[in-house]
Image (cartoon, rainbow, N blue to C red; front, side, top):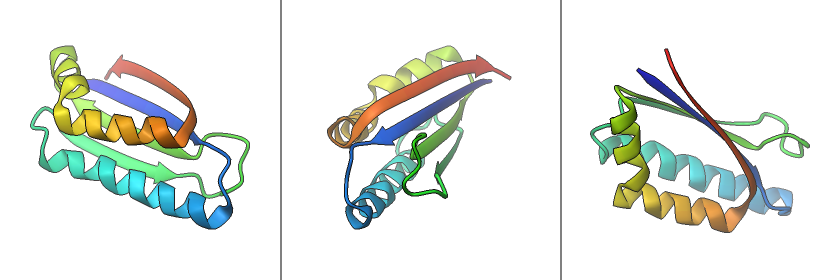
Length: 99
């Protein structure tokens, strides 16, 4: 199996707006489980410290194979989420590994 881990750092938003965007992104990401069959498991968590210098949101997802991860990457529903994430974030870090 492949573990896909992604961290997101939001742009500099006021606290209330940042909280709303985090909730929106989390919801969008979690809904992918309902539409992308290759996605076997997904967890999304926000940093407990809202004004952290670190990342704001973490995505953990599992796939049976690299091919399934590749299918997820180009899936139209995933691309919609990617677009919104691109509009709201300044930084992203990712790692994919077998487990």
